Length: 165
Image 1 (tube, rainbow, N blue to C red):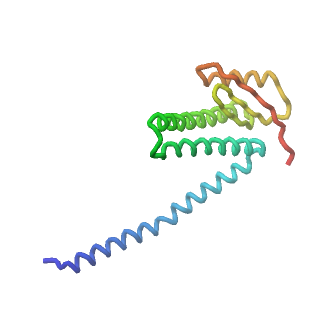
Image 2: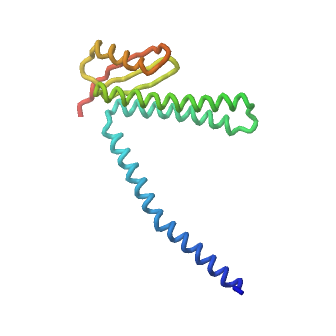
Image 3: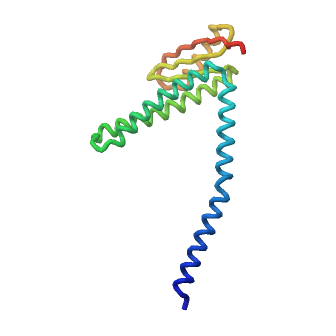
């Protein structure tokens, strides 16, 4: 018959072995995530200053709304209707964020222009980085962006000139 001491020793040895393997593999994961963060930071710095500023402001605004909705969801004294509205608000924020990113990427791909897209209800505001202001290009982009929506959107395009470095 196996002694209790032997079982405990085997259990502790197994636990130490599992933890050792975990800690040996952990730095690899941390190093990989750090490399990704550095790469993303470098890409952000390379973006145009104006676009980066607009993106940060938009992100801060969305984060503030997200926090408000999450606070409502975590309140114990909030009604079901309030929680449902907060949940729907969070869902809508995520959909809008995805749509903004999708449209910005499509504009970048099709027109090869640095841009920023912000959607607010039925308004789409687009900032383009381009030296010359071209009304036919603006019209083409407006038509292109409208194709992403089922309902009529009020699309505005603002041209910004690049700052000399």
